[in-house]
Length: 33
Image (cartoon, rainbow, N blue to C red; front, side):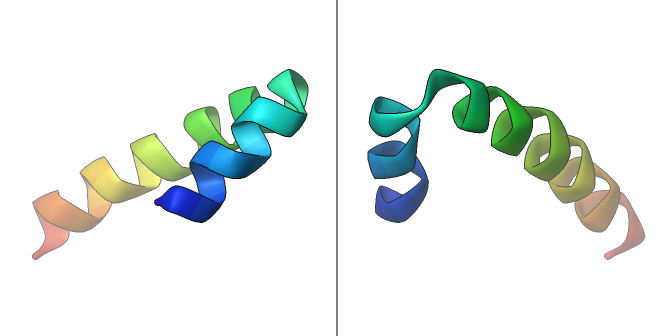
């Protein structure tokens, strides 16, 4: 998580991509598990 937060501070666009890709994936992963 710290790595993502660090990259988020460096690049807002990258942060948006991570947020849009990882959060939905995590939600699906929780549903599957």
